[in-house]
Image (cartoon, one colour):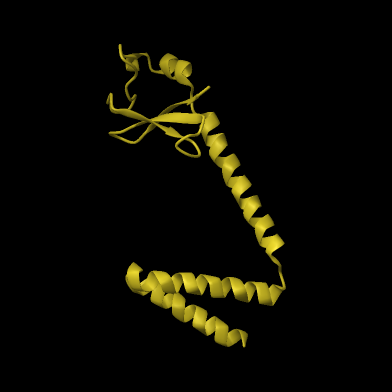
Length: 131
């Protein structure tokens, strides 16, 4: 029985990989759900363990992203390290000297932890926190 399900899974994965997304995308989702079903049946796991593993992965990724943000310089450090980047109306990029910058939230558009990036070269400039 497991070999038949595995064969169907591999067929759906094959169709999802080698056909266009419109045709193969739905097959990939079906194959993914069949694969999860096989795992649940084979290991006799319940939803709690999947939820616990998912929350663990989410927490780990949250900490990795937060630590990357924390390593960025704040505005004062950025100005000390790059005094030539200070302009009358703001700052410019220390790599390409572009004045076109944009701010982004760390976790979402409304996140209080934010950072500036250069629109021209894409480099991350500095971090800040919205009060």
